[in-house]
Image 1 (cartoon, one colour):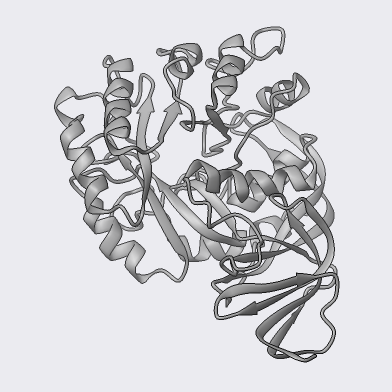
Image 2 (cartoon, helix red, strand yellow):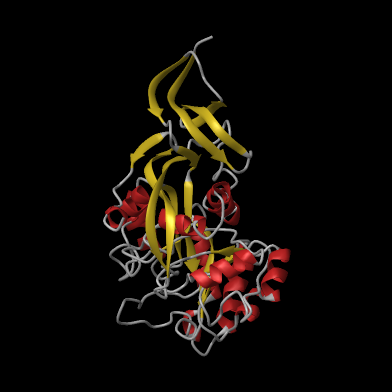
Length: 390
C-alpha cells in the first residue's frame, strides 16, 4: 500500500517523553498534523522529506519564560531570531505587559510572528515598564498598580493567548509591599482559573514564604538562583519548604536570565534529588548575548549538570505544556499538531558561565537545525556566539 503524506521526517532519533519513545523512527505529516510514527515508513509517497539521520527529533520546544515585547520595552528581544536559533516552536512572554499595554504586545508583536507566541499577564497595570542595564523600578512596588480587576479583564479579553498571571517578588520588584503583590496575583489567578508564575529575587520575601503560598500547578521561576534565596541551605540540602511545595504540585522552572541561575545551586539541588520541572531561558536584552543566550544553551547547561537527554527534552516540551494546560502541545502523537524541533548534539569542549561568573567546562552542546510548526518548516538561525568560543 502506498500512502500519501505532505512531508516525512526520516531516520532521526525520536524522543517523545509522553509516549516514552526513544529510538530511530520516521514521522509522517499530513494537513499540519502527525499522520504516522513508525520505525520505518516504506513505500511513502510524499511531496517532501527531511533527512534527519544523526539528528534529534523532539516535540516542538517551548520556552516558558521569555521577554519579547520587542521595541516597546527596553529589555524586550525580537522573538523571531531567538526562536530560530533555539529551535523553539513556542515562546511565552513572562509578564512584560499588564492590562495597560497588553494589547500592544498582542497586536504589534504576536500578530506578525511566524512562531507560536503566548503570554502571562503581569498583575501590575503597566507590566515591567522600567528595566534596563542602568535603571530598574519595581512594577509590583506600588499598591495602586496592583489591580486585580484590571488583570482579570486583560486575561478575559485575550484568553486565546494568555496562559496565566505573573508577579515578580523581591526588594527590587515588589519593594516594601512584598507578599501583598503575591496575594493580589493569586487572587487574579484564582478568579480566572489560571496558574500563577512567580519570580523570586533576593529576600525578603524568603523562598519558603513564597512557595508555601503557591497552589498546585503554579510555577516558581528562577528556582536555582544563587544565594541569598537559594533553593539549598548552607549544607547544600534542599529546603524542606520546596519539597512540600513539589508534593502539592507546585512546578519549579529554571528561568536563567541575567541573575537567576547559579551552578552551585543547580548542582547541589540536583544531587539532593530535586531536579527542575521546567527549563526556560528568561531571555531578554540584558542576557541574550550571555549568560543565558537562549533555550538550547540553557538546556545544554542542565545536561552538563548531570541531567540526561530525555529529561531535558521533557523539561522543555511536555512539562511546560502541562504548566500552560495546553495538552495539545509538547508531544509527538498521531493526530496531534506537527510541531517538531530538529536538533543536533555537538560534541565540543565548551566553557559555560552562570550569572555569578562561575564556570563549568562541558563536553556537549545542543544546536538547532530547524523546526516545524503545524508542518511548516522554519530554518534555524546561526548561533555564532557559541561557535566563536569553542
